[in-house]
Image (cartoon, rainbow, N blue to C red; front, top):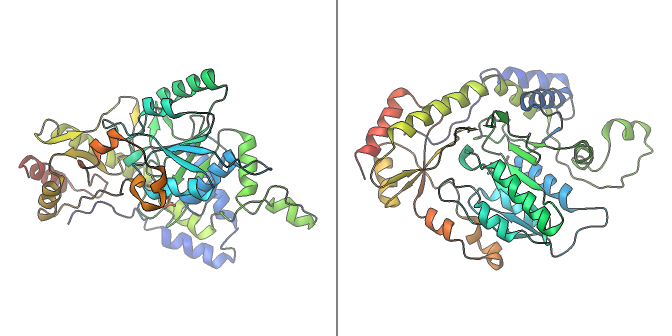
Length: 373
Ligand SMILES: *Cc1c(COP(=O)(O)O)cnc(C)c1O
């Protein structure tokens, strides 16, 4: 079976971890700082915070945007997409906020920005967007929607960009994490860059970075506060710090990740060429100024059950990855009509596109799809 995912684990990771284990400092040692410095340099933004998962980074991002010292107003809502992994959306609930679903653009599988513009109101506390499957949303159009909201409502909603599947992606030549929003990466086992488990929050300004740094660890300033013993926590926080074992794995995997993601892109470009124009199959839109990570390869197919069966028989793993999040019973009270998503969900399937595909695998996938289902 050609797998849909594979763990991108470097052969060096074991030695790096062994060094940490022998060092006697396995949690708050120097590896996390070294990992953060390297990630900041790759992104080109020094305001990074490594966390123990992507989900905690999302939780912290929303917490920073919506919890002031006096608490949080009860009627706050976060505009978000239902076409994502549940890890995007449950942190909204965990922060005591309501989810208002925004429809999905069937051409890109990212947020429908016209629907977003319609749904921004004085109750909007934040917007959660996702670069789904490692393909990017239109960040310039998003800026225009925010400009319009500011002109209309007198405030500019803040955006959390869920980049969990999009490490090494670039928008107009610049890495994600540089476009004025709070950006979150996941370093979970199946993501382009992995620590086993881990995440990263990238902040757009120094104030958010400093507040985030404290709230990541109980609201305590680890170095200075604890040295004196005379510390006060004015702004309580969480226990979201990354550990040194995870950081050591991440540092080892960082050395190869650009090359591997480039191989994902070459495979995707091959599919873009070879799968175009096949009856019953539609590709998503491509944009010259987007450099995606191509985590999986999305296609919209007629008769998806037959397509999935045919792929399985041919030894090609496909998946729907996640259920539409708005259909879970825990958010039943938040449902609303989403025609774009209704059109996408019965048709969307994901094909393997990652660095592990051989030329023979790629050919086999193309020939199988071309032969029909
Ligand atoms: C993986 C993922 C998350 C959660 O990240 P973890 O590191 O597993 O907590 C959130 N959003 C999306 C889109 C993801 O793919």
